[in-house]
Image (tube, rainbow, N blue to C red; front, side, top):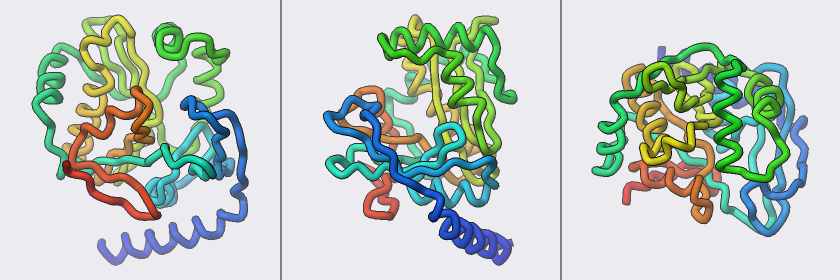
Length: 246
């Protein structure tokens, strides 16, 4: 089994090197509000095998729809890939409290859908979190969520029959990649973002999944900075993962 895994890893690295010729730089306004353009090193794909996607995630890449990308901003290094090893993770007191107070939430995992219920909740979330943006909930689903290239599922959080949160994740037997999470702004006191990550870490631990990828940690952006409170965690800097435990 070890020899087989090593062979797959070498093959994935070979494929990744071969695919580099398709990546191009694209410059747009920074989506996180930094005072300069963001430069994406990106390529479009129709599909991506799990073992190859795993190598990209392990190399600090992210996925947006059918685009695989990494950040190459000349004036900024704020976007830092962050991941958790579920076997290492130890919840702090506040995280344990958050997990316990949300035990009335029912959790289900299903194929990705674009239901009216999901769209309604996402519209509420976008209006509260990103007021003034032009993109609608349907835009997010058509251009971002449904346009996926790997095994993508949704994890629904309900209180009774009421949908209060949806986590969209890429999932394999070796890694889980959080793509997007949205929730009912009226439930903000429950710390749903923290509960979502705690649940996914616990899910990965139960399924013996090696890594939970949290996306980007951005120190100066409130919606992204809280990810660093999950410890120990790994951050990707200088082409290597570094363990942070303090």
